[in-house]
Length: 205
Image (cartoon, rainbow, N blue to C red; front, side, top):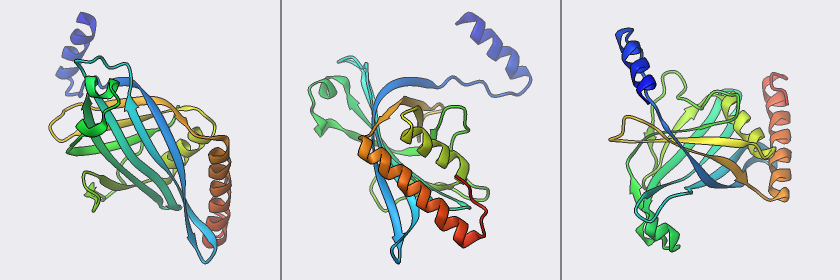
């Protein structure tokens, strides 16, 4: 800890931000979304839920619910809501104490890939759904996450509340049935075919 603090102090002289975000184990689950027009798939998505695990009765657990989706070569959407729940209530299976927190940013990340981020010139919007925020993101990080979910690889979900200066990161493998994984693979394949027809073959699997 002293070595890390000393390193941060040295970096401060170089005007480099030094921040440690918390990474926590979580139970993640997912469900496939698909978008259709005239009988053809034009977009794919995954609804994501995550609950922090390993929390004691006197601690607070973080909960995420949201989705990612791809709509074309320009990218797609990230949508999310951040909540907290007392560990005692979580351990008792009582979801009535779930408290929605004002979120400033949410992101998702696949192994070895960059996290989702705002498209240039975009901003985070408040959704019509209470507590949710959403923004437009580039295509590659979104597709990387979807393939990670499909292949059973761990992903990260980052959350920052309005008053925090650090991210809480929930990490784990998204639980999804083999049938859902197959549906996701099929959706992505048909989405790529749709984009190739629409954009002149610029997309690839």
